[in-house]
Image (cartoon, rainbow, N blue to C red; front, top):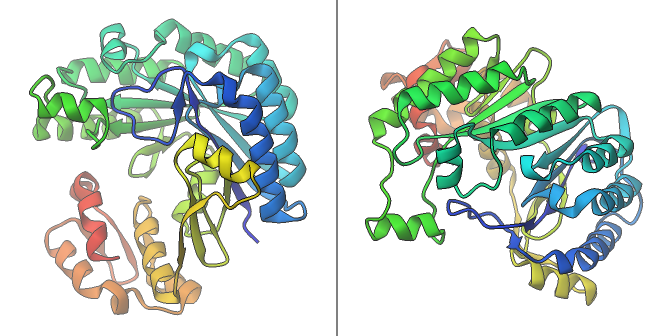
Length: 373
């Protein structure tokens, strides 16, 4: 049975211009119905409680539920997903929402890891990104997490329009100075359907130059390594012993449960994705109908290919013998030609046993995966 569970909380005060996640902005009135729907979906999916090692509340903005809503969601989720000894329970948070009552509610429930959508410490950049918090909110949130014995992960965005390399280096240093256990860095992307996409198409906003984005990413790798962080996945850095165990389950190709609007689960070789519209999800679930919008039964080869690609996102890569033992497929049988070509281009390193991304490969990894899938 899966040992990881994800719960999607779709609520936000405002949809940021770069965001294409499944969420609804300014609809706090839907929270009671959402909690009822999640409880019903869990009951229909599981029939009986199923213990997990990792539980993750993502969004959207889970902290938009407030202390009372978070407590209720925690109660019903841990009923259906009891936590094993040594569990990891992560909640994503907006620094502006991190009030003492919210932190106390999370700690009382048993949350032991806080993932803060920090994005930047620069007021001008935060305004450009349409964020409603400032650097002081990030620092206050970290202090609250520490008071309630929660590990801290900080998300940062680089390559914002007009951002300089020095400004990015300052963001990194301010994050390091807060001594979090984990830092994730993401280059800003322009996704179709977002307001940023429209602004770029109209010439109102320009993406960062490729060379600058490359320099920013490499600078993050070097600066975080010098500060003692382990670069363990393309976008993720952790203090020793503090990797995101939940996300590692995805990258290992493990199966996982998920509920909520737009949530994707992978159970018994079947991948299902719920309807992205919060109102449609609520209407369907509360009417006793399925929330699933897409369903795919993966055959053994497809599962093996996905496992290959997810594993290669990790800096340690994967071993040929371990992969074949886990999937009954050889790596060379599935993607030998592509791997050989990427090795020639110095995007992959292959010593005959271990295959992993090179420093150059890290810069273009997303473009490599389609050839292996």
